[in-house]
Image (tube, rainbow, N blue to C red; front, top):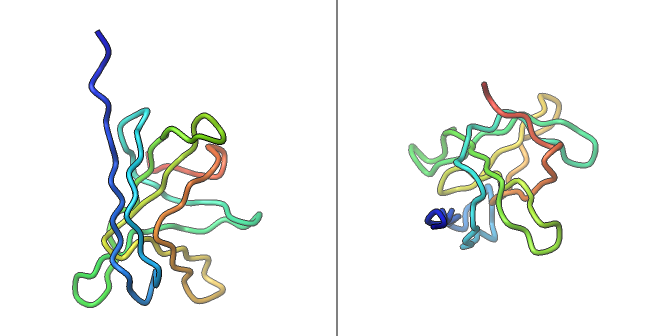
Length: 110
Protein backbone atom coordinates (compact mmCIF):
# COMPACT_ATOMS: atom_id res chain seq x y z
CA UNK A 1 0.00 0.00 0.00
CA UNK A 2 1.48 3.39 -0.99
CA UNK A 3 1.70 6.38 1.35
CA UNK A 4 -0.74 9.24 1.02
CA UNK A 5 0.87 11.98 -1.09
CA UNK A 6 1.82 15.24 0.61
CA UNK A 7 1.05 18.44 -1.28
CA UNK A 8 2.53 21.87 -0.62
CA UNK A 9 0.42 24.87 -1.59
CA UNK A 10 2.30 28.11 -2.19
CA UNK A 11 -0.05 31.10 -2.14
CA UNK A 12 1.63 34.52 -2.17
CA UNK A 13 -0.48 37.65 -2.26
CA UNK A 14 0.81 40.28 -4.71
CA UNK A 15 2.86 42.75 -2.64
CA UNK A 16 5.92 45.01 -2.86
CA UNK A 17 8.25 42.08 -2.12
CA UNK A 18 6.75 39.77 -4.78
CA UNK A 19 4.58 41.92 -7.09
CA UNK A 20 3.36 39.02 -9.23
CA UNK A 21 2.33 36.82 -6.31
CA UNK A 22 1.55 33.18 -7.11
CA UNK A 23 -0.74 30.26 -6.44
CA UNK A 24 0.92 26.88 -7.03
CA UNK A 25 0.72 23.29 -5.77
CA UNK A 26 3.64 20.86 -5.58
CA UNK A 27 3.76 17.15 -4.73
CA UNK A 28 6.35 16.68 -2.00
CA UNK A 29 8.76 13.75 -1.88
CA UNK A 30 9.74 14.41 1.76
CA UNK A 31 8.67 16.42 4.82
CA UNK A 32 9.64 20.13 4.80
CA UNK A 33 12.71 21.44 6.63
CA UNK A 34 13.91 24.96 7.48
CA UNK A 35 16.02 26.64 4.79
CA UNK A 36 19.07 28.75 5.67
CA UNK A 37 20.77 29.78 2.42
CA UNK A 38 20.19 29.52 -1.33
CA UNK A 39 22.48 29.96 -4.31
CA UNK A 40 21.32 31.99 -7.30
CA UNK A 41 23.56 33.05 -10.18
CA UNK A 42 26.67 31.76 -8.36
CA UNK A 43 25.96 33.92 -5.29
CA UNK A 44 24.84 32.63 -1.88
CA UNK A 45 22.01 34.44 -0.04
CA UNK A 46 20.57 34.03 3.43
CA UNK A 47 16.88 33.28 2.96
CA UNK A 48 13.88 34.12 5.16
CA UNK A 49 10.18 33.91 4.62
CA UNK A 50 8.36 37.23 4.34
CA UNK A 51 5.01 37.74 6.07
CA UNK A 52 2.37 40.48 5.86
CA UNK A 53 2.40 40.63 9.68
CA UNK A 54 3.18 44.14 10.95
CA UNK A 55 3.42 45.42 7.36
CA UNK A 56 6.28 43.03 6.51
CA UNK A 57 8.25 40.78 8.85
CA UNK A 58 10.54 37.77 8.68
CA UNK A 59 9.26 34.23 9.22
CA UNK A 60 10.62 30.75 8.52
CA UNK A 61 11.70 29.81 5.01
CA UNK A 62 10.96 26.16 4.30
CA UNK A 63 12.31 23.68 1.74
CA UNK A 64 11.27 20.26 0.47
CA UNK A 65 12.11 17.95 -2.41
CA UNK A 66 9.21 18.04 -4.87
CA UNK A 67 8.34 16.42 -8.18
CA UNK A 68 9.58 18.44 -11.15
CA UNK A 69 8.48 17.52 -14.65
CA UNK A 70 11.74 18.67 -16.26
CA UNK A 71 14.31 17.34 -13.74
CA UNK A 72 12.52 14.49 -11.95
CA UNK A 73 12.87 16.19 -8.58
CA UNK A 74 13.95 19.65 -7.42
CA UNK A 75 13.95 21.60 -4.18
CA UNK A 76 11.08 23.99 -3.51
CA UNK A 77 11.80 26.91 -1.16
CA UNK A 78 8.86 28.95 0.12
CA UNK A 79 8.07 31.34 2.94
CA UNK A 80 5.23 33.50 4.18
CA UNK A 81 2.17 35.00 2.53
CA UNK A 82 4.45 37.68 1.00
CA UNK A 83 7.02 35.15 -0.28
CA UNK A 84 10.77 35.05 0.40
CA UNK A 85 13.52 37.58 1.02
CA UNK A 86 17.09 36.90 -0.09
CA UNK A 87 19.80 38.76 1.81
CA UNK A 88 23.52 39.01 1.06
CA UNK A 89 24.50 42.00 3.24
CA UNK A 90 25.72 44.03 0.27
CA UNK A 91 22.55 44.99 -1.57
CA UNK A 92 18.91 45.60 -0.80
CA UNK A 93 16.96 42.39 -0.15
CA UNK A 94 15.71 40.52 -3.21
CA UNK A 95 12.07 39.41 -3.11
CA UNK A 96 10.73 36.19 -4.67
CA UNK A 97 7.37 34.45 -4.40
CA UNK A 98 9.16 31.06 -4.15
CA UNK A 99 12.15 29.26 -5.67
CA UNK A 100 12.60 25.88 -7.37
CA UNK A 101 16.29 24.95 -7.22
CA UNK A 102 18.70 22.14 -7.80
CA UNK A 103 19.36 20.26 -4.56
CA UNK A 104 22.96 21.54 -4.36
CA UNK A 105 21.80 25.18 -4.35
CA UNK A 106 20.36 25.01 -0.83
CA UNK A 107 21.65 24.84 2.73
CA UNK A 108 19.25 23.68 5.46
CA UNK A 109 19.23 24.56 9.13
CA UNK A 110 20.36 21.69 11.38
